[in-house]
Length: 412
Image (cartoon, rainbow, N blue to C red; front, side, top):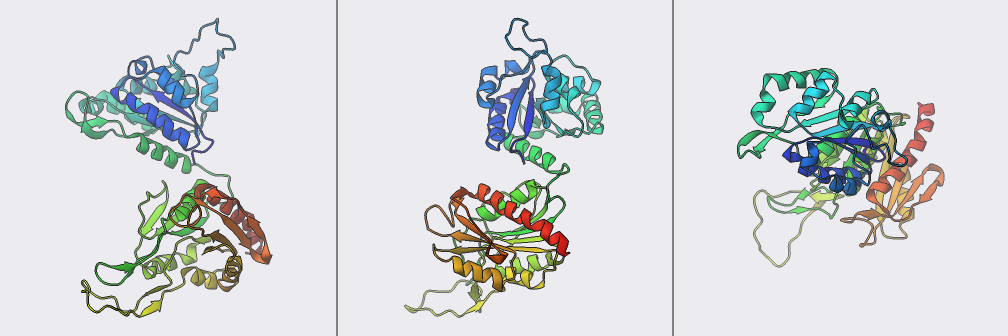
């Protein structure tokens, strides 16, 4: 969602300003362009050089640049508001809240606030002493800004620069980045995915042997989470059903955590009728112990026999009952040369598209950040992708899915 977005970051005079270079780095890493509007007081807490270095852009402060500067733009205070896709103010001081609320405009930050084009989100993260924030005047200004459509986030509790502990801390850069992501994701989208209900399964499943042991696999969930994030960034309403993984859910996505294949199947089946696109990226165990044992199995003979029974095939279940308007997308993890098995799986499970995922144990498959996919559609349509990050591969996959949408709309 942040890729290619143009963000103005307003930095005011509070000790929390020391966190802003890290925030800029996070936004840049996510693909955003960032320009910093620094107040005079903000420059006492963080240097222009630091912010210019991490943003790659000159820091903006005074609305009246030196007249002898070659190529200077004397209308930046207007063009900045036109340029920005969003305005983030962090930290926001009591003084800046008062100026914004009153419509005062005496520096680049307040000018950008006034000239920002309609429907561009404004996120404000106050940071100050807790009693200052709770004072009647500050709360009046917060209410005014909220009524104007700004997203004003109450400060967090913790240790303060005064030595006190309580309300007043600015949110951490990671939380600010996540809130910006959510704000942009909530805006109307022009993508073909806008409003579509997408269900993605991700990660491994765990099949219980006894109270402390299970059968599983090495899936990290990274591919499924990348697909869910990409679908949400394109405006879809995404539900992510995931097995046990150590990943944070992308912002704005409904997450359902499960353990076993049967739990994942139950969660998926409850959504089948309302799903427009079902993407099965999970590494679901094919079999489970027939009779899991309560407690812990004690070590006994040198050999142990265990009877396994087949788990439900979640993707095939959706493929068998989907209507003409619904799409079923699958993954097939195979060693090089296993592409024919992927084609067979496409037909047998009534899928519209399958991603043949080459497993080589080094840079494609489980527990790595890259994949080598071949996208196979109906009619033997095949697109072989080079090695890509899982995020980039998710984008290519959804590009292929998007090309199927007009065809499905005609069938429906």
